[in-house]
Every structure is written in C-alpha cells, then in structure tokens.
Amino acid sequence: MLGLTKSELKILKRLNTPIKIQNFLDTFPINWEKKGETYMSPGRSLGARKIHCFEGALLAAAALWINGEQPLLLDLKAKGDFDHVVALYKRNGYWGAISKTNHATLRWRDPVYKTLRELAVSYFHEYFDNKFYKKRLVSFSRPFNLKKYGAKWMAAEEDLHELVDALDHCPHEKICPPKNAKYIRRADKMERRAGRLIEWKKSHPRT
Image 1: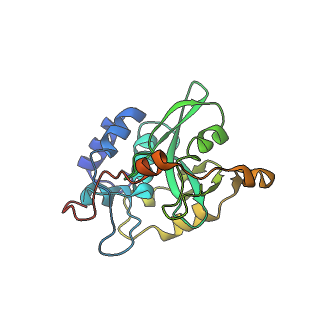
Image 2 (image 1 turned 30 degrees about the vertical axis):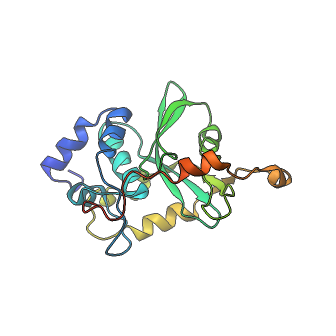
C-alpha cells in the first residue's frame, strides 16, 4: 500500500493521534545531512532513523493521511535563513502543528489557534538569527495538501526536490506589516541563550 512495506505501514497506523506522531518524531536524531543535502520520503526516513524538519513534517503528514486525516504542510519562510516546515492538524476547529526541530523553540503546537496566521505568528519571536539577533520570519504558506501529488512521495527512493520546490513557490502570506518593521525588537540575552540550546550535536554518531 502506497509503496510502503508492511512493517512501515504498521508503524504509521499506530501513530493515530497528533501527540503519538510528535512523540515518535522526538525519538529520531536530527539529520545533519553529513553526506549532502537530503529530502527523504517517509519510507526512507523510517529506514535512516534520522530526520530534519521537512522530512519530519512529511513523516507526520504520512501518518495523518494513513489514519484518515489530510496530509497538510505549512511552510514558514525566513529572510536569510532556512525555511521551517511543519505538519498541520485540526481539532474542533482549531489548528495545531507537528514539528521536528533541533532547537528549544519552533516545536510542537497544541490545537489552540483559530487561524493559520495565529499559528504561524506563534513562531515569530523565536525565529531569529544568531549574528544580529533579528527576528527573521517573514511569511507562511497556505495549507499545502500532499494529496495533490499522489502517493509516490510516501516511499520514493529519490530525494523529493520537486516537492520542496512546489512548497517553496506556493502562495505565502506576509507576517509583519511593513510599517511595523521598525518596531521589532531584537532577541534579548535570555532569548539568545535559549536559541543556542540544541538537542542533537553534529558530532553524535546517530545524526
């Protein structure tokens, strides 16, 4: 089914709630891409046992889809920094997010956000660079439904560059009104300390 093995399908079927999915992603080391850039499918990620944010969002979306929910992604775009990608879910009309990150912030979001803008803005204050400490998050995408791309992404052996490009170029909504940009405060000392916390060091053999 969907190109996945029986054992892979069994794993994903057990992840039948967003909390179970997030707890599962948290067991994976971060993928530092030591041998070069990767955009692994959920099937490959299960075998590699390490993931970065995009791969984690895909894996979460796959589990949601197999368990009867929409496989939706949200792309958070930052100026001069990597995008952050999360999987979306909804409960009783409120949005939440499943997230894989190596940092203390940019993590899971409970379903308490009435709009996608509310959810996206919840990541704004924690998304700053480590040189000038400026807040970098500039826009967020509309819900990106992976069903439009069939099921090949579930177990593809090749890196999913086309899927990444499609997500990157889909419509995005700006976060900060241009007139308010001059009022944005840089991250303070405590925020910078928290921003330096990471879960998996690059030297760890499992990454």
